[in-house]
Image (cartoon, rainbow, N blue to C red):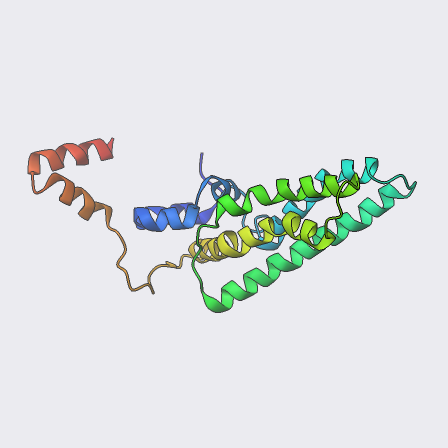
Length: 203
């Protein structure tokens, strides 16, 4: 089945390192399966805001005795999603100006942050301890926009260039990795072994 993404057809012209830079790790690879308009950095950041909002539904329901808890949740959820969307758009603008390539976000720091934020929010709701609300919201909201800024926004820009038939790596100082050269180095000039490898690739 033919891929709906035109940029998939240009991957074969790139080396292994370049393909890894474009596709990223497991999370980014899932986003690359989406259409480029849907995987826009602002949409991905807003989606993170939606996930946080859904997770806040229970704390708002059981931590607030007011009858207006649902309207407060709707209002705060809208603020969270719009804030994340704006941050995603700003990240894309910054990346478009700086031409920065994607970097691996510090997962061991970013991934536990929402869970820590939810834990502190729960403690704050039960009034066991007084925890600054700014710290709670920082832990909850920072991981998504930070991932978008460091990893996805630069990667999305490269994918758009590849979609337009532009090699995003041609301006780099480091030469592109050629698969044929890598195979020749592995076979070390052994023509018989090289013919076997070529035969396997053709199959």
